[in-house]
Image (cartoon, rainbow, N blue to C red; front, side):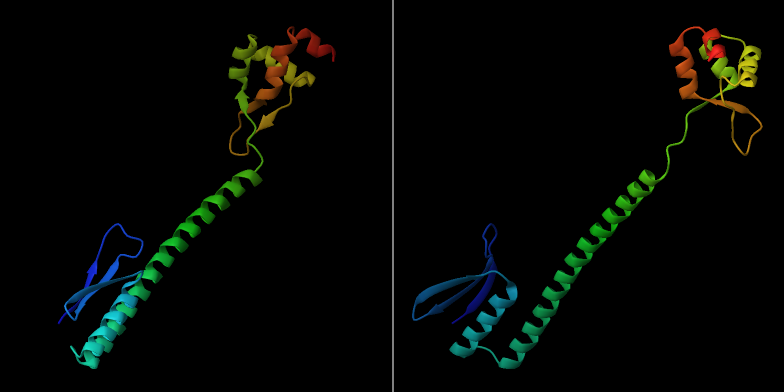
Length: 162
């Protein structure tokens, strides 16, 4: 007489225990291997096949291995959650920062406006444009928004009268 364990693929409960009793073969399916081994050991004790000490050791080993598998899957889930939290924190930091103003050098702004850089400095002195300076450079910049407004208005002489 023999009680055997097998793993059948493609089933909702893949762990299978098969045994023969009075020339008839029986089969029972379980969701977890621990339940299947426990049932196998009960059947072996009922049919008088193995000693109980071997059974206890195997059940303990299987229980520990299943607990380890569950802990590993929980660790993977926690790592995934932590990484998503980190990315979300990064997105929140980006949202909290004010947008960096787009700026042009005097020479670039003069090219865009199609005037000389000397005339642009004159317009800066008159207050048509505001100076924008970065702390680590001595270069004067103009905000791109102001240049776009000046382009939209058409003639720069109109800006002087405002």
